[in-house]
Amino acid sequence: MRRKIVAGNWKMNKNVIDAQQLMFQLLQYKKNNPASCEVWIAPPALYLLMAKDLYENNEIGIFAQDMSAHESGAYTGEISADMLESIEATGAIIGHSERRQYHGETDAHCNQKVKLALDKGLTPIYCNGETLEQRKAGQHLEVVKNQTEVALFTLSAEEIKKVVIAYEPIWAIGTGETATPAQAQEIHAHIRSLIAAKYGQEVADEISILYGGSVKPDNAKEIFSQPDIDGGLIGGAALKIDDFAKIIEGFNA
Ligand code: PEP
Image 1 (cartoon, rainbow, N blue to C red):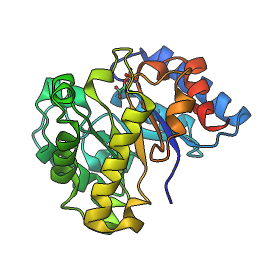
Image 2: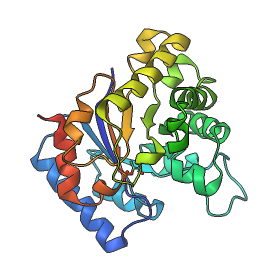
Image 3: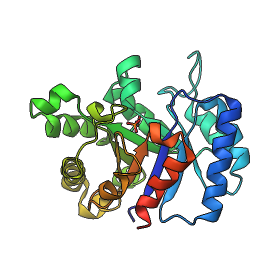
């Protein structure tokens, strides 16, 4: 069944005191406001264990912002799927455009990471999306097709069902510019049809596809109401409890 999800990507923000405060505020909010969707956060890796301790009943999913494509060994600075499994994290964001842009991550890396995550029982949130130049050149459908095929289409049907996809047009991330609900819906339907062509409609209908790119309290409801959009991956607006809460409520209305 397609899950409805609002996931916050905190990126490299907040010191430990502020992170703890926001985690606590979110927990209080969640306890007082039964949501119509799952709520996940991806804080900096340093704070994952703190989140685990605070959310001991797993009421909020805990994700790393990235994980290594290697199982273990001499990879300074990396965290492994095994480590995430050992702290009972829910999963990891994989292939965020900032990892691609600043760390040279490719869809081949994403493919390795997605497989490793699934092997350890973690949920991968696999991100894709086109640049502004690619959209202007009318290449967005083709770009997203290639990304999805390279990163995911070596998986079995059972495996791909466990992946959450986040379509995040790069031109809309952190820019204040959002894809229109129609633009986002077009790509989401496209991704679902690619999956249906490869794995069958039943599999495609089970996969949650999130939209990411300047989702805010005032546009969340309309974006989430699109038939192929199952929620959002939220950056800037996940850093303030009031904004994040209003986005979660985009599903309640
Ligand atoms: C993101 O980084 O995944 C993202 C969607 O950021 P923002 O909401 O700030 O555009």
